[in-house]
Amino acid sequence: MQIIQWVAALSLVALIILIPACRDSKPGADSEDSQAEADSELDRGGDAGDQVVWHRNPEEALAEAKKRGTLVVVDAYADWCGWCKKLDRDTLADATVQERLKDFTLLKLDTDVHGSFASRLGVRGLPTTLVLDANGNVVDRKVGYMAAGAYKKFIDRAAEKAR
Image (cartoon, rainbow, N blue to C red; front, side, top):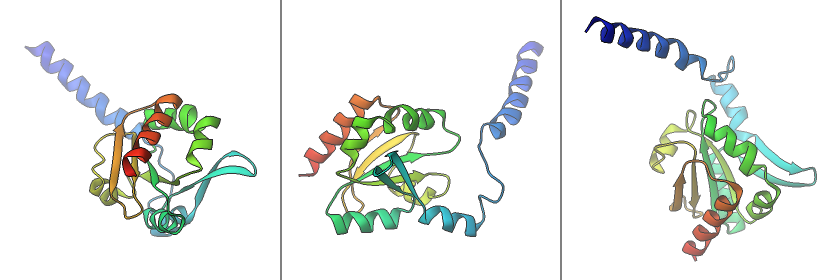
């Protein structure tokens, strides 16, 4: 019985030490000024001159989708999520995925920053890819990592569903 208690205590200590170390926090990132700057920034991917644009602010993305008459592809992520980073590195950086995403308005949704919006969309695990209509209604969702081929099939299926 003492061995089980000892292992449990060591496990708890390890969790206390390791969980904060897994977060990629930046000094000052929690300030309102820093967040306002981050919300208005756009991420660009792909080659120069041939880039997809990822909004960081949900309201801006929905406004653009209404203006362009497009669906919104949402990449719900957190900085500490390893599978989210793999999705960025392997799938979202893929040239064929980038080409397909040009038909959509794109939103990178940091769930640690926009938690209430993520909750409203029903985000329960990361990464989550959602397709929304221009009013912010969920058309389809997929939780977890997807390789490039599966990702394109998912957004194609969602686009078809929205018609």
